[in-house]
Length: 111
Length: 114
Image 1 (spheres, helix red, strand yellow):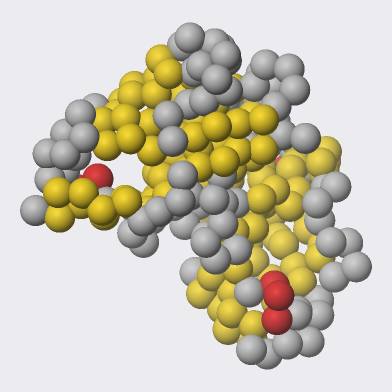
Image 2 (tube, each protein chain N blue to C red):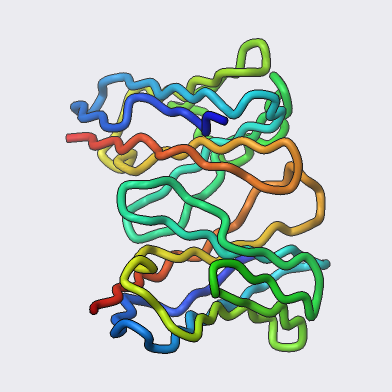
């Protein structure tokens, strides 16, 4: 069974530029999460989807971040414009029951 | 609020040494507790979990017991191997709902030498 797929794995952009991350969850998993992991820290939730509905986006900085999960499968997380402080690893996870399965993450560097 | 505190690393051990990584939590209600591991270049993987007080989670020789009286979930292994070198994260879910997000500690880096 394929795991959670994320792309790109690495991204370097200049500040004020837009960037997008893509996630393909495990087939059949209704719940999808985006976490952000700053250097030396644990992951922190940005947004959680149940199918195509965002049920917890309280930690998403909505002035510059947006996310979508069309058709309740793949998801895209966007930052526009990026700031230096957005440099981090962005993790996608999915679950169908109790266990969350994580993708390898996208490492974003904003210069 | 809910939070997790782990001992700071790095933890450096020789092969076959005993490992303890301390984890304490703050939570309202009855959280579930987890240990995740991140091997170099790989994604987070669930190592073990415990869903109620006094439960012991175990996997690959690692163990952790959910202690409500001390609000702790310390990770232990009797004899570590070089292949155990990784970053270990303690985490909680504030309830037993399947979709609830995880709250992580900062992670503890373990380095095992032969």
